[in-house]
Amino acid sequence: MSFDNETVTPFLKWAGGKRWALPAINNFIPRRFNRYFEPFLGGGSLFFSLNPSPAILSDINEELINFYQVLRDDYIGLEKLMKIHHKNHNSEYYYTIRATNFETSTDKAAKFLYLNRTCWNGLYRVNKAGQFNVPIGTKTKVFSDDDDFFGASKILSTAEIICSDFEKIIDTATAEDFIFIDPPYTVRHNNNNFIKYNKELFSWSDQVRLFESIKRAVYRKAYILLTNADHPSVVSLFSSLGRYISLSRHSVLSGKTEGRRRTTEALFIYNVHN
Image 1 (tube, rainbow, N blue to C red):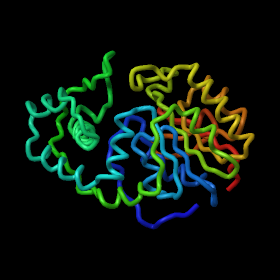
Image 2 (cartoon, rainbow, N blue to C red; image 1 turned 180 degrees about the vertical axis):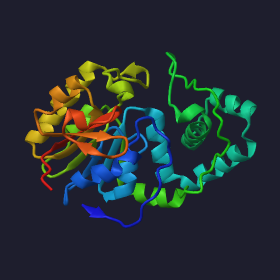
Image 3 (cartoon, one colour; image 1 turned 90 degrees about the horizontal axis):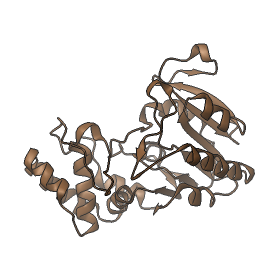
């Protein structure tokens, strides 16, 4: 494992992103580990803040993975296309781009980033046919002052970026590898309702499958941090293997129910003894 001092701001706004929780999560990152794994990549806020090498990054969302592969391999072409989208952006242009099926990986990646920046609330949602169907939002800024295409490409250059189900990726982690797991879930009223992710639901059976994957990795002596819904059913399932902490949206830690605020998320720590 190695770290580089260079970090970049994540490019994507992603539902359930953990940028807000990094100060708390950083307290439980193992001091030393071999490989870094992130099987639900999303916005990648922890990866970009750590800049670990080597890293195995994955997600089941093909468009998301294509974006990161292009950001790594053709950041110059991606940046050029984003400048074109920025120049042409308006409501009519948005819906034209949304309806266009591009052929090249770089065109697809630029479309993905453009829609993420300009759609309503940065939401990723597809219909039953797998087509992105989020309406235009109110933001008109296609470029961010924090965008660093070269820096992101450099950080991603030593990462393996894979489109895969989470179970296959977690099963490849071995002793002293570090896995950060952030599956899709809702936090509204801390109810056990799982959001639509790609074309299917991340259902309770997926949660059970995730638990079994984590259990195998724990027995292989991998280091694991898991964020999940702070709901009794989830806590009961995942806390049997390790330590449970409740995180509020203001990064306040509390192990007691009465100390939690209304909107909280669960953090589970396995094999990490910092």
